[in-house]
Length: 231
Image 1: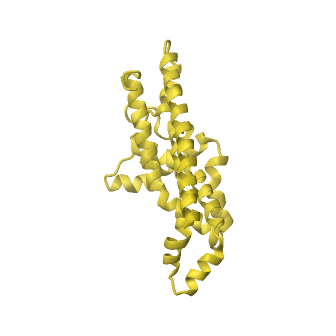
Image 2: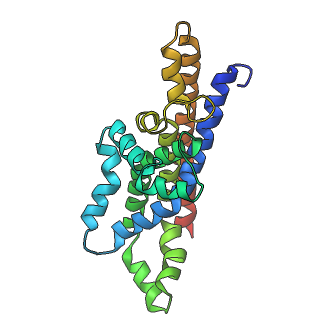
Image 3: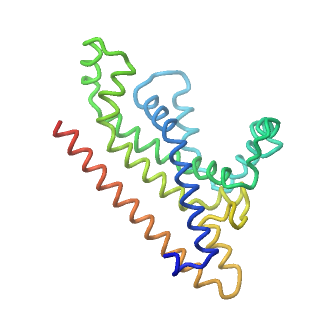
């Protein structure tokens, strides 16, 4: 693939993989927590939390990117504090990862939530009656049985992060080697004469990665579900 893709195209692919990996990895613990809270807990503002989690799916990506810019920019409430601590995220791949994580988070949470809701609460209650703490019940009963959904949600979030464009280009622009992921690179190549071939090669890469992610999600989820069912 390195011989087939040019240097600029390869940088876009490598950066997309890097951004998507870290976006998925960092958001996974929070995704599991939020999904569990929505599936099992009762608390004031639950529907508000559910709405906030799913907002990136409803809002135009440009709006989400602009909100991120206002929040994490150097003049924003979070970005300003980080800048005072010497942590500058502006126009770097780390902010691209933030945008990708925010856009992929609803898909992750939804898949994990549905998987947790499918776990029979009676199994959790039985474990609790034997003296297991809530944390231990979650780790030994809920989490293993919800693992197929967690795997599916994680891989789908990774694929979504790979394809994120609107929020990313609004939030961190389109800087080669820093924030130019595959979608941004495709857009950039289509703006210059003779860039259609490079754009098409990246489109093919995107399709291959997306299909591979979906197939991997199905295979892993079925294997884990079979093992859990067999246990």
